[in-house]
Length: 392
Image 1 (cartoon, rainbow, N blue to C red):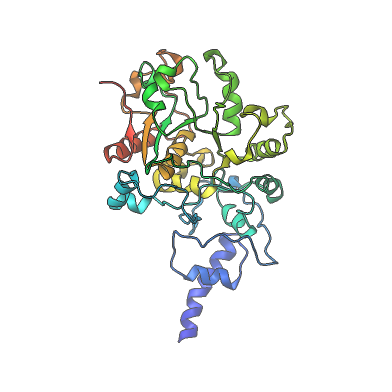
Image 2: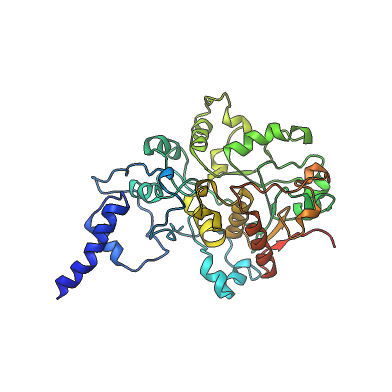
């Protein structure tokens, strides 16, 4: 009876594996499938079974919509968590832990960064089931891993606590037109840390948006394209403040090539030399690469757009500003958000540096701005963040 019962459970698993995936199959895999699903993966190890090899490349074009796997909602965990302060009585994490819905969604110790040794072959095989920037679908192991192996394990926390302070205050600054004539610059700069993204124009706009940048989040495309697209607004390139930390969102092969050129100080095939876009001399201890699990957790738990169920699913992701917001939420005790989309966004120009021009937010297909707008408002109402929504 026991054998018959076990066989009735094993046969559907074997059949599903044979026709639905290209995973390496072992008795360990089958045993894992029979266990209850958990959102916690074991601590990372860099050792794999000798016979384990990268699975064949999964192609995005083979899927009509976002493929769903039974391990979609499983993520690597950091030990200890990346957040450095633990005793802040007014921390936003106290609010999160007191709200059942938020407590179930937030993962305080989700792995934040990827680095040399963090992606074993078994990790590669797991993450190959997700498209960029959430994994390695469509990408080759031999093309990506040499770049990731150049990224050193972070030696320092992204946000070390300030001396004599139990809490970390953060400002996350977007580019929304709501900041034009806001006079919030001094308030923004008063925070312990200021996050900025993409085209972080400050020169000439200090009164409204502040001047400091402590953490700059970007892709290889945004850091290069902003330099020429925003030249007419006196933007000369990414911030280079003393002590600045740079955070890269790797959204495709272009970014892995960027990493190679950056760490080797080489010129890319397009003629660009990555190190020239950062504060000199380039400090690898101040450069971080966001882990694919952190990015997928942000999307899956908070910004799962309905457009992922359509044919354009592969290009759909939260904005870089949204990822930056959740980076701050993971690491800070208070988060004030400026320049993010609000209910009355139609009153303002697209960007603050357009100085009130009659432009409107362009809703690109790859982002769900309305979903992000509703999320920021909800987190504001729940007092997880404080969202600047313009003057009365």
